[in-house]
Length: 368
Image 1 (cartoon, rainbow, N blue to C red):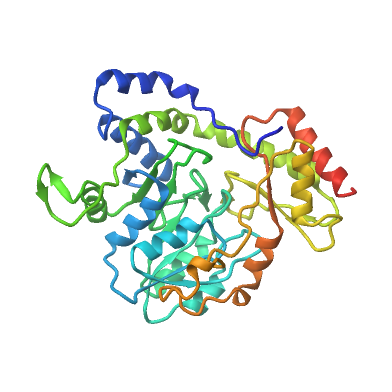
Image 2: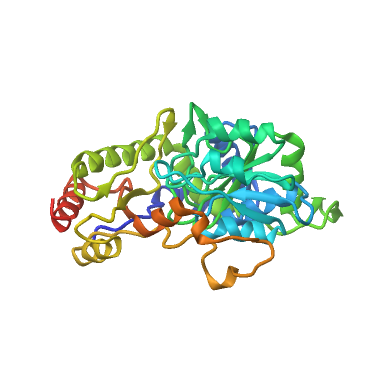
């Protein structure tokens, strides 16, 4: 089987052993070292490490001190953590449809979704490419909105040279399958000194110093063990990203012209880091998306459906007062993409033979 992703953190062994031998394995100097390295990658003054990507989103919203009824506009095509974080923070969710070319929220749809209760714009940088921040950032500024970037899948990506996570408050996931992983972990990035200070207090049970409580806080801390796993990956992120980009280029060249298959695009001015290589299996393809996924699995090609439904289209979210008037039919582009999206292996551990096999197998089963 050629896997959809490979986790290889062997380079971290020395640092992990260093932490274990120190006897201090909770948040400490290794977390600070990781934060400094991450701030350099994100081009921001501050990087605040937390225990997972969902926590990063929750803490970012909490730090803005939204009031009941305040709205966050975000994408209906995303991992459920985006929605769960907004609900946990007690904000009202409004969705805006996406664009098919970048899988991200459509600035025109955002403009139509904004109301006088909207306080936050939360674009999702999906699959490793940013949303159209050239339009979204000015739109947020025009309406006085805070920007929280769900950059879970976009570490190292950029828009017109400006890194993901530097347009407002950036929230990253370091889950096991991400381009940079600490097994579990997250990071919040910002240039705002006051906000960074608030977040550091919030993540530490509201303490500025031991038993000096300033707010009702939480335990959102990352451990030194987790940070030690991530540091070597940050040090070679350029190399890992280049390998993903080369693999994506090879897949695009090899799959070009395959009937019924729309290939992912790298849009002008954007640096794509290829967390996923996601194709769209159109209605005129020889096989449906689900049939193609099954055929590839049977032939030993790992693949994934990210994501099979619009994010709120589950029983547990129906009739939730914090998701008012959310109807699948109001988001036709997102619904179409959810029915057609299929991700193929693009990770840095693929061999030339693996890439050839992926291309040949996809073309064969689709009758190319």
